[in-house]
Image (cartoon, rainbow, N blue to C red):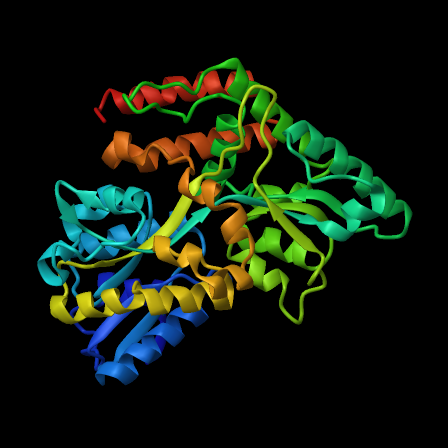
Length: 422
């Protein structure tokens, strides 16, 4: 097993493909590197290599999903067969389907049996199973149990309660000498992660989901505008200015170093906050995200899948690797070792899994009822829709315009995109 970076690999594929040396390995897989992703991928691949005797090269990808998608599109557009297995976001199957193998053909019609039906449906494009579910995600709220108990607060149920609790604890901790303490950290960089955060603010304030199931643009409404304005009020007050450039790992770094009361992140952060080198080990609780005055808690549906490039020279072997990595023993290992949500329903009844990650049981409804981004209804245009949404949101967080101005302008931009049909 060897490791490469996808940036380096893409340069080779796109720039000097005709002179690059032939790869010695039997297969190549691209894996993410957020949190423990890469380490877990390496361990799973090593187990498959030992079982089968085949060799696999691993290429790591950018943490930004926006940058990762761009690289994938470049590589697949070149019809390169050098990357056999790709880790793809839950919103990408429709975008990349034409470049991916139908796994029903190589793994059989029951290949996805036992996985969450919503994800299998999401990964099935025109009757073709273009990716196998690997792990699912939903945004959750991490909080400092010790600090809330110290100052007599319960975990917040509304965004307003979060704002008030964070403000008070931040002030008291700073008075006590913790000058670096902040109230709330999240993913505020202009990228796909901000789309997830902002969708949760909007949906939990009964502001819709950007585009509804019929393809109608719903973003321009007062609830959405006020939700974005509230988020903007956090910047510089309970959220550091630097959060405008935070992705998942920057937010985790602040929280895990003991310098934040609340954090919005994915479940993967749980095991890392409990690690030996974490300053908040044993002091962290996890609950569902707050809601607005007129809405209910909403968690963006996330997660990643494994797909096989249709340009692979070893599609059968690549499919076997996918089946192994997405199978129950591997998903159970990843859940226990690093809190990655399984996509197999049976594992949410597994005592060893629930002992390792207790909130997998208490937040089961959150994981199964997460709010999907409008990738299915907008199809090939989803990338443009998401870019427009996170750029508009970022402009509000940065103080460049109000929530009302941003959503009115966003509606016009989405209307232009829609005229090219989605």
